[in-house]
Length: 263
Image (cartoon, rainbow, N blue to C red; front, side):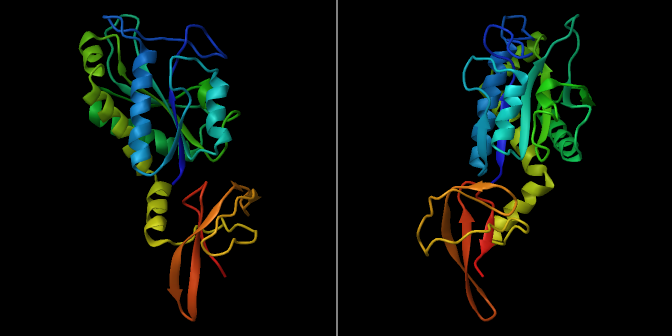
């Protein structure tokens, strides 16, 4: 399946590359960075269970610069990048769920943000603060692959006591994480890829231009397909009947939604 990158916001103890160590804090002292990591790791589990290859920008209390976070998605040619944050207001009276785009966002990023906003809002049941745009460094097109859909979700306002206690419960964290997984699944390309895997149909335009290994063998040589994707391994995944004989169906292991039929 496609590669997804989850970015648990903030982290560490100092500012790194424009990334703050922590912004929002609950009345009882719960830090945004702690909850963002908990939800992010739960989202990784939820997405992995759906068959995605998932990377997280951090797995512990460390901080990465904004560009470095984006580069995790760029380096892995991610299909989607979702940054997870919690909100706070000056008077500690606001509440709601909102999702952010960069001002120079792509159409695919807008679709992802709309899905994330709808799915997470259905879990938080807070005020719909909408999908907005500003020049967020972690979403900058200068740091992302142009094919990556990216957005940042502010799950809710941590500085409200009732919400802080709710956010500390694993069930609520897992529900938000599952909502992010649903949002990724909602994208048209995710539905298409699931259908292609189900029927073992080829993805047009991704035919690797190199020799196939023998049936049942694994080719460990590095190669590049016609779309410019690096592929390290191939394997024979099955056979498919067609008029005039049987064609062998191959899968590119490091990008396992890429199938082709040997001519």
